[in-house]
Amino acid sequence: MPFIHDDFLLNTKTARRLYHERAARLPIIDYHNHLPPRDIARNRQFEDLFEAWLEGDHYKWRAMRANGVDERYCTGDAPHEEKFLAWARTVPHTLRNPLYHWTHLELKRYFEIDERLDEKTAPAIWEAANARLATPDLTTQGILRKFRVAALCTTDDPTDDLLYHRAIAASGLATRVYPAFRPDKALTVHQPEAFNSWVDTLAQVSDTEIRRLPEFLDALEKRHTFFHECGGRLSDHGLSQCYADFPSEATAAAIFDAARSGRAASPDDHARFAAYLMLFFGRLDARRGWTKQLHLGALRNGSSRGYRLLGPDTGFDSIGDWPQAQALSAYLDRLDQENALPRVILYNNNPTDNYVFATMIGNFQDGVTPGKMQFGAGWWFLDTKEGIEWQLNALSNVGLLSRFIGMLTDSRSFLSYPRHEYFRRVLCNLLGRDIERGEIPDDDDLVGPMIENICFHNARNYLGLDIPPLDTFL
Image 1 (cartoon, rainbow, N blue to C red):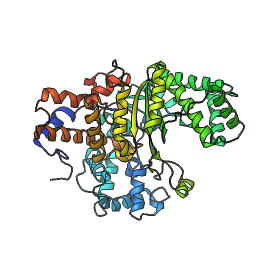
Image 2 (image 1 turned 45 degrees about the horizontal axis):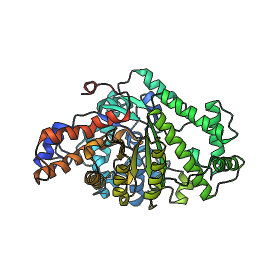
Image 3 (image 1 turned 90 degrees about the vertical axis):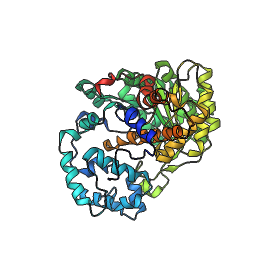
Image 4 (image 1 turned 180 degrees about the vertical axis):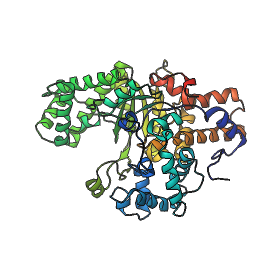
């Protein structure tokens, strides 16, 4: 039997029935990822397996470095095939890391390859995969069709012209591709050189002369409006923790003026300015009926040497251990007091915070919108089998699993769509085990719709996106 088989990760008869009958064929809504819209608009054809699989994948780079692989074969100038062979030599050492599962799921689902990847099988796998990548089925748009991706949301800076999103929308592609508003650079008054360069770009694209704080806010609102007009209905923020030291408008304006004159904000002033802006962004999202995503708790760029050599998002981040509860509660409560709390998805990077976030959402449900406040899927270091189970268990124990909006890839790779399958198998295995233990009823009419809702329907109903009918993708 091949390693990846029909019942992979499904350890009971009930789990197998639930997965194959209820979860397997549903389309995908990938509401948070880092895919480049340009590659979708241009229907990119990958030249080889390196481009499709290893280019930009810091998960794999981290594993390769841990295996003693020289940086030349991770982010350096080694030929593509040599980089792939270096990864192939690393794969057997990733046992019990989800990379081992993902690698072989991806080989099976994209290329129909059952062989396990290692140094011996690598040359044949390289040739076979490259041949498949040359076909129309595995262009970027072909991949979206193959995996029945009904909609996806990319992650986009407010200054982006969204040219490629507009081109995709006009192309007739069945998959809906939407931007998500990610204004992290608007908070960086502690880095005035980068901040001022970004503000100048914002001024240009918004046709606004930005000299003072009100003009800055006006420019940001214009871009928020532009994203809305291009179909955007989600925002996103990557923060170490929420900011809750809310300043007066005069204080925020003074911090802005100092940064514009080239003076770096102190840590306290940076936190105050960020708190002021996060309230502003929350109000914008609520006013337009958007969903706000808060990705909290990552310790970024831990290796200053790695950051200097390679820049951000190259595999030098880890789990952070900031206290989350008090500031997060204060931020959500402030918006709630103003009746300006949008739909919110909370993602934690530290498993210590699972029950903090899972209980926090219960404080701010509104009794009108089912699942208005969401405890998001296992993110980054927590999208493992165990991390997914932890998130599902925490939400089940203190909230409503039935209202959960399910999985996302959070990936820069078009070869990551089997992560939705991985999640669905873990979900069905968890529920199937509970049924066979007698902990929940053995009733497909009760459990089956919940699975379908978590895998597809809840996200479709929650996010406010224009998504084609279900049978378009079945």
